[in-house]
Amino acid sequence: MAAIAQSLPLQSTEARNELQQPIDAQRASRIRAAYTTRFVAAQLQRNPQDFQIVRRANMVPSAGDVVIAKVTELGKHLRLQSPTSRRQLMFVGQEIMVAYGHRYAPDQFLAHVPNNLGPCQLVAGRGVASEVIEQHASIDKATALEPVGLLLRHGQVVNLRDFAPLDIHNESAQAAQVGAKRPPVIAVLGTSMNSGKSTTLGCLVNGLVNAGLNIAAGKATGTGAGNDPDLFTDAGAFSVCDFTDFGFPTTYKLDYETVRSLLAAMIREQSATGADAVIIEIADGLFQGETSRLLADPIFAEHIDRVVFSAQDALGAQAGERILLEVGLDVAAVSGVVTASPLAAQEAQNQLSTAVIGTYDLCQAEVATSLLPTR
Image (spheres, rainbow, N blue to C red):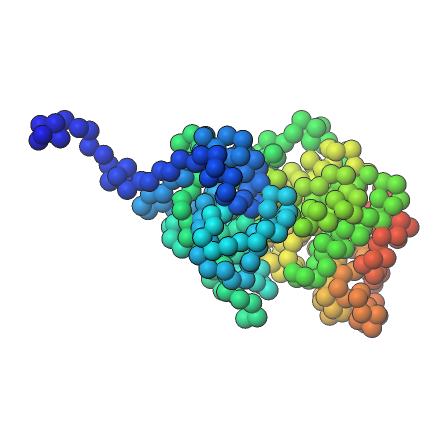
């Protein structure tokens, strides 16, 4: 017996500590996939035999890596947004498929990708797993997760970028032909989260569509979620994409070169659809790190013709207009939450050189088209 044992190949410590689990069709059907993982989920359902779950000591996840995790305690997020944007109720003990990602949300969580596969949290209901660093005082603690392991395919850990339909480094053939012949591009920015950016963009899209134009829309930065693209589609945009279509669960803590390349690639891809105009949302507020760097970068003015600014109040509207004008941007209008109050809107207008336009007034064709740049 000793001789036989000595003749067997020695396994490394890493190999002995590795646990791989196959995924059969039944298990694949029970794993609740999130919106951020929708492209991976489609492949998993079609070919579950190609995938395994892997866990080994000292495994360090990266942003975008797909993780299968068990829900251990419900908290802030009780529902997980599905690949089709349905808000599916979660239950303790269920396996879910989400992606590791960093999150920056002043009214929710600051969270970073952990350096191990230990317990973590669901920091966005659209499917982002991370480690909470700080949270807003008014919200519940995050839903707790216990990672089972990372998703593996053909011996490689699966990252969202592996199945994303768009690639910032390899643009489509149509986008490569756009060059300088792109349609007008309007960016929607705001003072902060929940300043009304997405609704402003949706109403602007609707107004331009009401004017008979073909509009493409996108969201270039933020945390992956199906509700914003759904809103843009419902408003009438015939082509919609966001950064998750390029394989990023969030854009927070991406290296800056990737962020600027993502913005340019999204505009080229949406311009290549044959749209009469492209409307792009930039998430969070002007002081958020990646947003402030984009505004100061010549690439922003090179790709963006005009800006519509969403503010929560008159003071934010005044500060935002000043910042945008100082970096040389053409501010077409101020809108957003501030316009829900006629008094606040009038306060803002008294301090601004830019027109303050009610969010839902943007649905009017003549109002929306007046914001298009003249060339």
